[in-house]
Amino acid sequence: MKKTVWLTLFIALAAVNLAAWLVERYTGFYIVMMFRLALVFGITAIASIFVGAMMLVKTMEQEKPLSDPARQSSQGNKKQSENPE
Image (cartoon, rainbow, N blue to C red; front, side, top):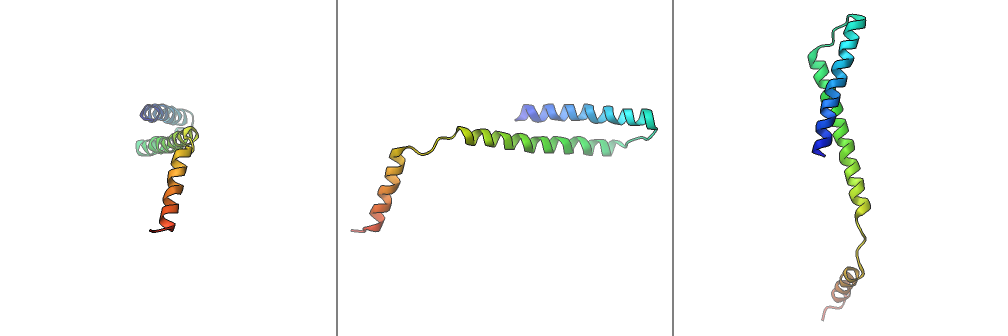
């Protein structure tokens, strides 16, 4: 996940600065550096949330249900608690 977040940070940094340069070049409007940084960090934060969610979904798909011995032991505990002797 760290590699993906760093990659997203650098791509967002390049894309936002390129877009700001194009806006300044063709419209004459200067985009303040604070706004550029806010865009970069916003893009990075949103991307990290989506990457984290994607990793959680992949982990959930790989999990296996409980095997029979675990189910039997949990059922055995329930039976013992119902009949206290």
